Image (cartoon, rainbow, N blue to C red):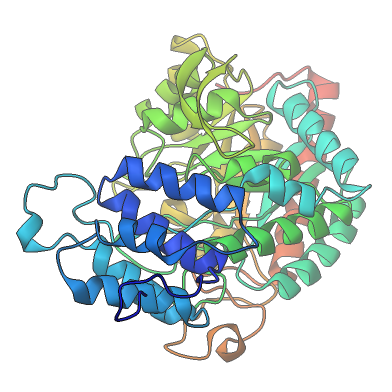
Length: 463
């Protein structure tokens, strides 16, 4: 801020946060030259000072209003206040009516920096026991999907993870159960961090880790990666849904099994993503129960693709993938009814065979198949178990939504995590731990029966 004589005042000490705000403003106005000059100045002297004339010359280009210049200059000279700076940047980033010729980012309120994936993985590297756990989980899942292992692949766990402490407790229990049933079941913990919403609602631990609509995504990524490290370090392989195409760069090295949800199975972006992932992927049938979209997705994901993506360094890049041959269908029911019965399994096998694909599937005991009633999950599992007992080899896996306590609860208006009941889902309702143990023991028994029949009668699956 120049004095009355017009001479330059004392240099302004610019904080990183304040300068970042000015950069955002310059970028939004499309003033690339000024932005470039300012970035160079900041790079050349980040800890020192930048003369006021330089800043004011750039600030003057932001708006014809001296009030805007004064407001931004005040933000630079005053101690950094995040709330104030966000308020200033939000107002400037909203296109005013006098600049109606602007066509870009008309409805974007602002951009916040996202931590690069490689920085986060360096900050939170996989623990010593995690990588062997991940690799073992992937290898065993592939062996089951390819029918070289006659065990049942079980993806079981909370609908979504919202409380890391409770998730670790659940995992500790599951590790012991998995070891007990390992001869018949390959248990992988369901560890979902992102939730697709039919309309709106809490979108998951990454998007809103504090469950208060503060949307601290950088914090969510850190909390999520730390949680994945803790779970896999216990020796438990984990499975997660691939809801967006960027978050896997932060977490995929810790995942053994993935899924594409019913709302995104038909998405080309998600099929391309699946083609480059390093672990097996399940595609759910459509929300209406349509099987075709899932079968088509498997074929698409097995092919090579070229698409726009983001590198571990956080840079935009053209991604080239080899294709993923380890994909399978997940039958989850739909608005038109359930699809875990014998006829549905037979129809799925025939549809896969027609496309020259492996005749294997996982059955989701929740969602459409449970008619959105968690108490029906054990009933679905029983029907699935009966088919396995009869010798059906096309069913290679099941998915179960389970938590420490049953049911679900609404997200609190205030209070965040502290206002919630421990061990209860805040998304889909789940069966409790005791019921989970009963269901998995019954499924293990079904596998043993199928194995004995195959040995005795040479049964190789029913059609």
